[in-house]
Length: 519
Image (cartoon, rainbow, N blue to C red; front, top):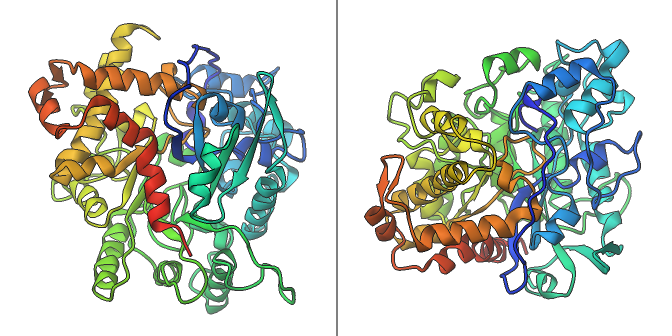
């Protein structure tokens, strides 16, 4: 999750366009079950339910919620929203809540911790998150999360008078079959955060101890389906985990993460440790095991959240592996562009809001440098474009947004230009029309993102599709001084507007899954 201190209660509905005759949409990164799974001890939600945050009488949380802009206080990626929004292939990102999220300086946890967090996050925390004196082992939680997802498949849910179900993709052929079956969603399992392989390291950092390395690698082998999930039993994980994000928001012993937080947020969540550090010896072992097809299924490393130093180590590893005949794609499941090379001194400056104040891009190191984009292109990888306006834009564009009214045509055009700016830049750095095959949607819905209010849930994907199609059919004269209309048409490389949006919303992600599906 992101930016919990910036959440506000903002309910809105705009009707989506008709999803008939559209290709099956794919979103490679959304947190469908984050709220229902983590609320099980207090609330009886399922993965289809829309969760509206409970803020009754909670003054502190209401103050946080009302004082923020852009982060919805309701579900964005519940399965009903995906069904109504034609998102037929769902990259379901599972992640245990990192312990730091319940160890927040501003909360009076003994009195109002549960109520405050339910209001701010939509999650009804269980007692294990509060008043802890030790670290949390995350792996049992991720196994429970996988059970929660598998338990719900094939169960019917009535939507507008018709029954819908979902099915977890097990084999490559499922990616052709499931999305084309009537009223069925195809679910691809992904995990965000390598912390799931071990434990939180807040109270005691044991990440250098041999016994901890053994535990982490053993848990990874369980996820790869190479060994049983339980000792002295035969049952192995039957469904592939397609990708695993090495890092998330906090230090996990695997290597440095890119800073995700503003200074105040780092203070509130006690973050900052590990920011920008290189890959660790344990992290190197984990990544090598993930891409080794001799023991269990390959799990694609998700590069999002890795520090620049960790990313560069990984890229060199992939080059070495390619020489041995082992091709692995660079995958950023939910990302935006930094708009510059990592050789640019502005890129490696400390990540603070003033860093991008005078730019049209957000050049924090959590975003893609030119070198990152080229590695995606060279390895036939994929970038899932995050639908977070805070990540997609710099201060120049942010100020333009603030000068317009919510839901206005003027603001919508700025949003579309922001999305197009990121798409076009990726294609430009790729250097040819193949760049259009390297981009899809990785919304990060329900990751507490700062949403575009017109396109704030999966249900509104058809509206975004149609608006972007119209944008490329008749491009504006200028995009923030970066691209002219002639530049845009040149970077379309002969593709029609329909072909471009079909690639971004549908075929690129599905083709990527089929190309790299673990055997």
